[in-house]
Length: 166
Image 1 (tube, helix red, strand yellow):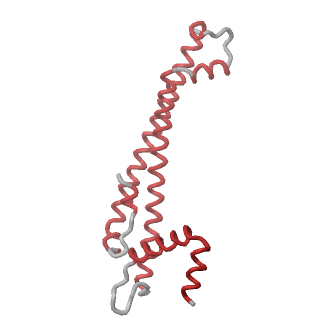
Image 2: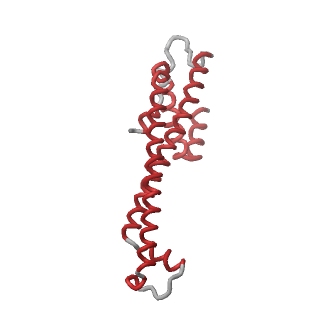
């Protein structure tokens, strides 16, 4: 899955974008659900690893160099167990992927709103021009370049432009 590519909107093909929106939303919602399932499985594996480590430590404290068993000592010893560390790393990796998948679903909700607003603007003939079709992508890129140039140039460029306009 390519979040960045799929989230883009072609302003000149709104009909095609709308036709694909539902399928994309379904694709990412299913992916998010699968990732939540994997996250629950990883959490369960982590809990099992913790329980197994707890049992091993309590049944043989001498092996771990523990003189007196307390909850804090057992909890800290569990954190040093190799299989617990591995289960925790897998849990964190799965949690990250699950969060990213949910973020993609949220982004597709925003994409839907953006499409709705673009269609509304189109219906109001916002993009209508006298003879040349309006190209929103080209104008957006020009605006971005201009804003970046203004940011880089600072106030010195503004003064020079004012002089040139006189």
